[in-house]
Image 1: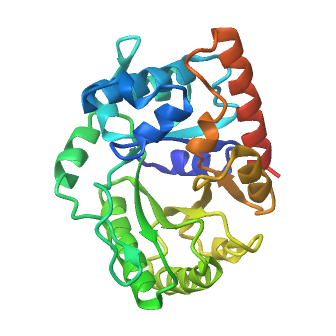
Image 2: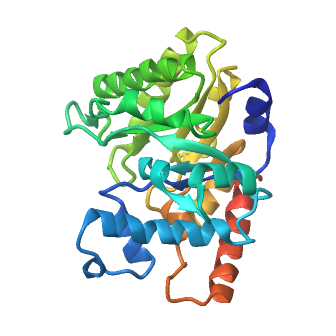
Length: 296
């Protein structure tokens, strides 16, 4: 769990956060990108078994090193998964020297006022209880902005911060993700409303509460940079939001003091058909590129 030493690592260690938290809805797309067609599996369990194999292949690679990867966000099924007979979060912590985070949201509610809030967290208490048996240092949760609706965005950000205080009080570092749909026509205005709402919540947050903030790469470079003036923000992260890796890296490099927390851009170019030598070569290229963009 969280302590001052871990907070210092999160705040100062070079590297980026690997997002390996695909759920039921996003896993099929991740597997297609990995070269696994939908007809390969018939059940949700089979699907998650295959993506666990993909994640394991990445994690056990010598290229997947704490020199580049600061932490890893895991899906809830990681609580039941092992790597070489060791619980997956423990393997990351003990063998790879990486900080494990747990995704705790249960998906998105229907669109209302231009946003999708988080669904009710009916599994929250159960997940927290299970997480105590593993070396998780933080919880991540996502909601989605679908249009520049000021009131909807304000409501969305409040939901994120209300949960942040609860998570921090439990001894974990909250990773807030008020995501913005990448291709909406009013994205720039949505970013303005989001920043206003973030400023409002941060100005009211107890200075002792620490958070990580994961944001969609902004239209204007360094648009969110001044939020780092708040002592509450330990690290600011960027999601790739479906961008191709090259474009995501380029945009990230233009946003200083922001590090990657990529998912699709992290696994782009990897394929289950590759030999281990080919796989490691592509993984090394990807890790180096994302690390360099994160530490400009």
